[in-house]
Image 1: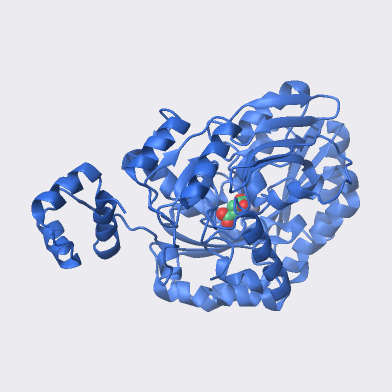
Image 2: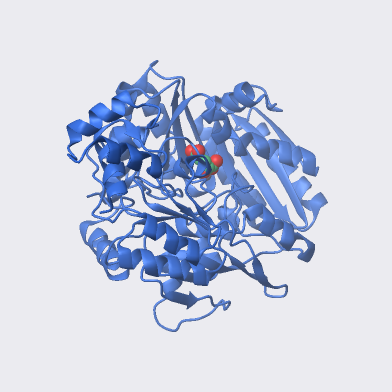
Length: 534
Ligand SMILES: O=C(O)CC[C@@H](O)C(=O)O
Ligand SMILES: [Zn+2]
């Protein structure tokens, strides 16, 4: 190991300081001593705080969760590596802590890594060259899209090299007739929709984070989102993927065909595997037509049984024009009102159901939604409701639901659980959690994708509390496993859920996953520490 890296390593491992500038550390070291003992370092660093910055908390919730987690047996980035990176992606190698900070911490501020290098490739060939080199050197990497993930999957855990895909944002082709779009992985969903709109098309998925999440990240996490009920998930809508393997080989599975039964469907391996088997660099996506009319109804219910009756009535009465059924409890409606000053058009109810239709005839869909509203009101299923057809009103109702996560963040510390449970138990988890944590928390909220039985249980506190955290985990995941639910409905495993992989998968299934990982990434450099428990 180079002397400068010995210095950095000693500082990082054994003290609470980090070296912002390796030159500076070198001069301290060389003038100080030839006796490279830990004690020398501690003394030197503590009396030279001008030369070393206090290290920010490396990991917040994830360090509480994984106090024993050890850095893997990977090489550390040297000055020579930096020179090679500079050759591979000229002027797109970032090492300044301020430039990297936003890439080291996840959206919710829960997981913080300590990456020292950020690479910004523009082409598949550059990604290939980076991975070939990192694999040869045994340097761990973390691929990163818009960094909007919620399970700590897109940030480093230790000092993994961050490969940001954000400059790979070209739309490659669009076939208007078939609706197949081919684009690079770093395209932001809103940008794709902007390009599709003039052609009367849209992405099959839409998420609250659509303004910053990238298609490659969506694919790598198999992100679900708000349109899944209607259009299905990305396993069905992604027709092809181009991915760079750990050794730098480019796997071109960028088919644009809807039907292709020629052997194993390898692209599926990259959908939802969180960058652990390869880096997705481009994709072909089947895009549906923009519906002629989008309308919504917001309905207030006072018991969960009524919520289920509402859902049933919506399916029966709206049939094929039904495109989303979303759920919010009173606490989640309150948080968007209190923290974001959004206005709910209904009075206070225990639960709210948002029903969206996407049809071809606005008047017809409005009539159908009004019939639904009439039916549920007359039968005492819904206490209050409203129908919106005008785009700005539709949008402001959607804003209530889409902004819950943003509003919760303002409470401080948020513990997030995205799980699938049987429909009949959908809200029991929230109610049981509320009882379990009592008044030690700011709020316990339940909201999510009722149509897919995906509940987002969120618990907030002003700051992290060991008591609250210990009350929640592993209890929440045990609860979900007992009713044969999934510990991750749509957010992936990342680092935060890795210990619970067996809760939703059998031993042989996890073994096969591990064998696949070993086969495709023998040195384990791709997004280490994620998905699998040790
Ligand atoms: O923050 C969450 O828990 C969920 C975020 C997202 O999946 C949503 O549906 O709004
Ligand atoms: Zn969601």
